[in-house]
Image 1 (cartoon, rainbow, N blue to C red):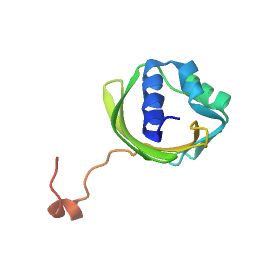
Image 2: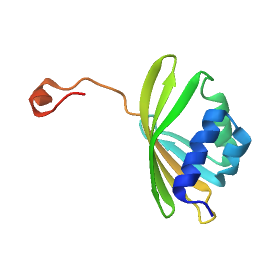
Image 3: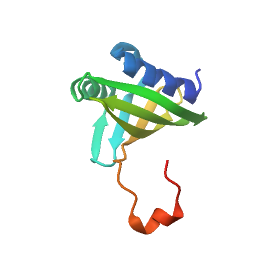
Length: 125
């Protein structure tokens, strides 16, 4: 059985490669995807594959910045570039006992400007 870190690394590698057959093999039959900002929810492997293949354009690339995992849980920090714009994403994964991905919670924070009342408290990078 692969570690949660290895499963999530394979998830992103197969997504980047658009290898949807290998991607699907990483998912539990009843995988549940949730996107809290848009309140999207997708149930089941077939529906989630369709969501990924039909719901997004093909001019995007994902770069994994970090994956941490322990037991049946992992989280990833990624950066997705599409049409010259890069956006960070935080994704949390729960694996089933067989090591396949059972649940994905996907956060895509919108960049925003630093509020003026906090500017004196931070260092910008």
